[in-house]
Amino acid sequence: MRKAAVLFLLPALAGCISFHTVNDGIARARIGETVAVGAASVTPVRVIEDSRCPTGAQCAWAGQVRISVTLADGSAAELTEGAPAAVSGGTVTLVEVYPERRKDWAIYPDEYRFGFRWAATGR
Image 1 (tube, rainbow, N blue to C red):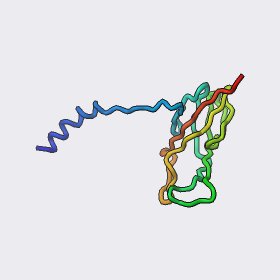
Image 2 (tube, rainbow, N blue to C red):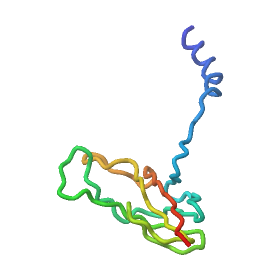
Image 3 (cartoon, one colour):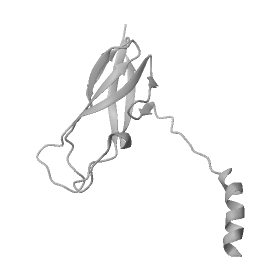
Image 4 (tube, rainbow, N blue to C red):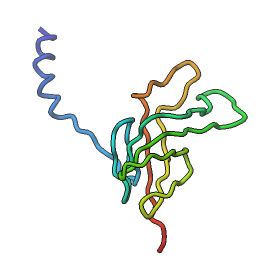
């Protein structure tokens, strides 16, 4: 009887679930997804390098993430985490990469999430 009640309530509860987005100035996308970043749009294409130090490990170098992206004008670019790249009258910076690397776990391309931030250049 209890299972039937739970199954009956599930569709009703599903309508109550909501997702909140954070307005923190970061545009987030996964590989193949186009996102507007200020005056530009960016589509992550592939991960070129993910040499970040795995969580819980001690490394001499923190490592880096480099990705290939396609811009709104169809041109290709390479972004390195933390390094601004000139695009459409401003700069786009790759500021987030998820998930974190773990030494006992492989990250598949469809699991990556990238965060981009826009900054206008002064005129």
